[in-house]
Image 1 (cartoon, rainbow, N blue to C red):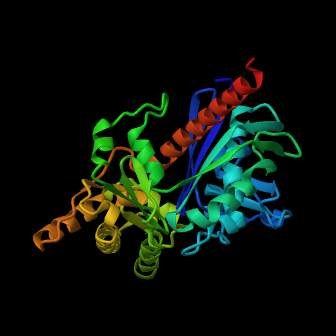
Image 2 (cartoon, rainbow, N blue to C red):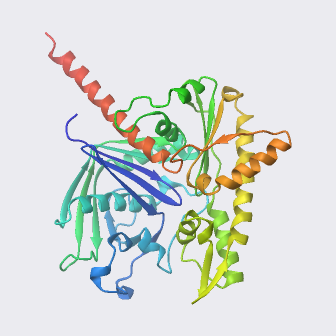
Length: 397
């Protein structure tokens, strides 16, 4: 292949996960799904500029046909979670129709370009293949509008960039040549079965099991996406549900605020604490005073686990294509966080005569974005082979 730039973006309701591949060199990023309107009047750095961490001070302005209001400037990601007016995702949000999707996607892509060109303030970034994901509930209706919104040229301006002389702006002109959209869950299957670098099959046993059927349950922030795999291909008849971890996080935040007098800045702060392990499940409402919050966390994770299993059970009994499936696989960041509670709930189901044995693969929270990068590379190879065939036909003889 010639020099290639691929970008894979898992548009999560809790986190955006990104893999960028430039000439085979892969960079990895995460960004909380949070934005907040920027107000110049109230902006001030709480410490010396030299101590400012760039990805915690991302202030962006996006000029694109995908954005309805092109005049606004936003804090994005970690910077947004620290603002009082932070906007998090709403339940069952429609990703393709919301400005926040494009503001965050373009923002994190341009952030990658800025890191790759640290001495420049006017950057051109060309993406040969962008791969993005959608929930199964939105995939069929929205994949084409999403592609149309993303293909083309977009300008992202970073304001107040630390270390840059006045006017402290960096402009990234981004040209997206082609877009492919993958369904959440189905991309995870690609991530499990294909090698990220040479695209060959790396799990023959899983591919073999797909002959009998596999069900993948991708549990995220505001959706759970079920994908049936039969004969190494997705079964289109299975669709996900508007259910995820975010409502349970909100209940934990409310209970901690009411009973322990500690207010989390955002879901992101809570999630980072939960992922750190139970030894970190405490808050400090006052200096030197630690309050254990596990009594608020564990019941919510248990409730989510039970609901997840119920939905899994309903799916496996509702689709003729994958009845008697060989494997049931849990993926997604929320599934990783509640793995223990899901396994405990599954044992109780076993005792009640409703067995459902889930496997939890390695990197289960990253499989969708890994699959998306594989999808981007496969799509580019397909295009090149088609072009080679056309070239052969037109030059033969």
